[in-house]
Length: 577
Image (cartoon, rainbow, N blue to C red; front, top):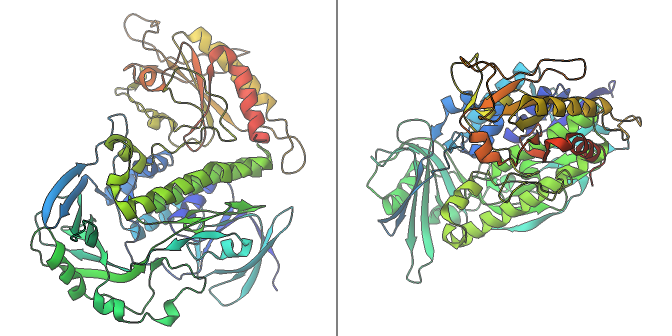
């Protein structure tokens, strides 16, 4: 065995989830290795829906524009029952939400993420398979089989399994993966149509039997390209009767995903379903690929064990209803990565990592339950109003209230609280900028916790900024990874001044920076000129907010209580409750 190599984090699986984990870790300057047993990206448009919350995450790292230039908008859904249009559902969201729904083939999402990660100095090690691993109190020892056929021993401080429904990491940990498979088999194909239905709309066509239950279905999701859709439908009787290739059957009993080899639908199989169910006559062409696939619903009993974690399909699988799977996995990765970074830098205690399971497993359980319910009974079975449903599908309602990093609420009812997504808002101005900024613009590229101080006067902000600096200097104070005290995470302070703030000059408001004094650091400031921050964050007088590196609120407090609130939060980072 050659000399053992080392790294901080080993990521197994280079799909969208593994790439997202690598992107976040590298942004935080954490060394990592990213391996995948496949020799190249798969050319299949598997996960295609991109949710608004995922776009917000990509905005924070500076990737949203690149993704949007490659994607197509998803404007809504056209629903047909027994050949007649029943509804046109528009995917509208409140005006303060910066992004809408989009679609992009998974291989394109992976390509763009891979290129981004490469700019940060990490390349995918393709054709490299995880054979086994063991862990102890100080790290994980992994055995890898490289593309050259040689075995390598790698020592990592942490291991993250993003290796899909048949995860070797999950199996190595011995995690349970409870659930079941749907009896139905489906066909999936990437084709072009010649119909003139409105662009940007998903087409769902259902045939109902005499008892009202659906017995045939066609779902078409638009992709980039004229008339191009990813179509899914029940498998044709001819293919269903044909035995699958035994070599393609999973050896772990998890029937989920595309079937490798064996039964491959031809264009004629897809055309036959379109002839039956397409809302208008159409001739299909240019089939790029097709497959038979199965759907299961499963979730692990825990997302981590010691120094090893699972994310994405390695932790949860479910029906593709609402395009939740890939997006949920990307949020898993984002949630975990900043916590790993803080612990690895000695800025938080190792107990912080237990918060990954505490925050993300309830989300996974809700997504699995909801998608199964929608797959079996339709969206009509959901008791929520249409806007709430859209916000939930957009993953904008995902939150961690009551979790280990969410202190007690403060402020008026319906105000954003610790554990909630930090809302975006428009209309933040600077005297040196000729256009208003969004809060996403202000937070883009930052990896530290951001403390937002809201008040109508600079004196109150200056006093609170001094308390932030004192809390930052004091650090966390609990045991870190090396046994010594943690020094606390980086804190960046920004002021948001109420629009009634008195300008220092009657001719033109000055940039509301607070000049540094011996006791107070300089604080960049923005004027809430449109009143949007006040409307969406609902401060009661001078109020402070802490935004986590993943874009969730960590704390909300009266400005007079800045020191106590930050002390409590930093203590929670060192040893979550």
